[in-house]
Length: 550
Image 1 (cartoon, rainbow, N blue to C red):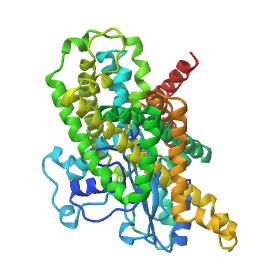
Image 2: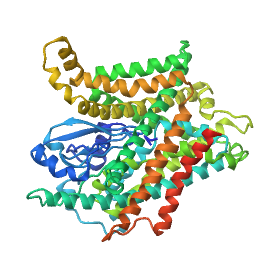
Image 3: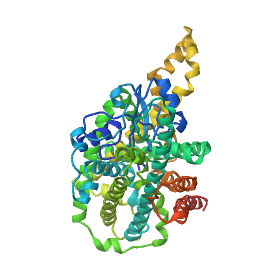
Image 4: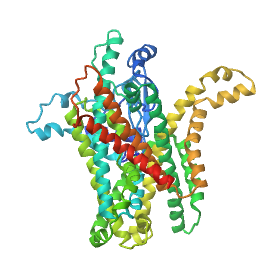
């Protein structure tokens, strides 16, 4: 996780420009999309008011950054904002970005006849682009924690836990598609009726928080926003904690010994300075290139590791009682749900294509993680004494060990950049809202007025937003070293399990119970299945709580 955020996405999609560039290259588009922030508190009924206030549907647009779990989206003016785990927004008033992030290819491609092959009819270019987006969103910096929590249980129990968590979140994802489709249809119908002269028939991109707000009430939306903040900050804490250790390892190989705490301080303030000097757009381009290197190195590590695989070491140890303890980190690694509203809009709410994209797109990380567990646990050997598989691979020496070390550092730094920029954009939007009453003071020419004017300026808001995002995780990580796995576990066990495990069944239950609901469920089994999925998410959070108490 993060980061599966939303997002928390990798595959060159850590931030807005990366995801936009990747999707444009895959689909052959040249038009820039519009932006949808995830975390805004706007209610579904705010559409008409916002449209009139902004001077029409295309008066302005907002840009969104993304994270781990690199994530990004776009927003039409007056639409319900969306956030990924990590997607936040900044202003962009260019009118050519006022449409949804993933609109149809072009007039020529849209007018092409449908292929006779049913498989090709489903898996067209847009579906494949959505598959890449989902897969890239899922794989992130949490990959480094996966072998650590899997090793005590063994390869077979860990793969079983991984498969069960993937199946659980895949079903939750399909359930979220059902909820998104129903809410978006209802919100769009109301917005079309409220907007004078509106007959475009466009569907709204509805954020996850707005889904909770619509189906569970305002309290549900506020609770969702709070949990999402905890989820995002826990992911940031995990990346900061691991970054210091890896940076100290790299400098040690260069005969420069520093502690992990010093490495955290150097890494965070260095990254902060680079972002402030290079700007967000420059960091987007840099992070995109770093993600390409990250995946290329990961492919090399898996290829070499599979050649050296020791099957005997994988089956020599199996402790099924320790498999549930890995669920939190596993959920953190296989989450992708923050991009579901975006995928729904991109595929024009075609349920068959959306379901195909989710199933295939989430299956790719599953196979990658299975291979990664096989390679890493095989490298750790069959010793009964606990060994950190990733640390063992990094300490193996030679070219392979160095590549693993560089790959791990890239996994963390790309996720940290995506998460940090996304979270900072969201905090900046909150600061603009909270400091709006101070604009009167900023007009004065005295010392206080000059200070307030500087503080609430664009540069000042940006500075304070990054301080709010980076300094709290850094302080906690320095005070309590070694929190990488624990923070990832917390983010998965509470953030993912509650946001994408507990809430979607509740939302679907409420929407299915509404009079006149004619939506065909994507997930069968009726209320029994909803109850089972709800209990699945709740059990992960309760198990984690019990382990803390014990």
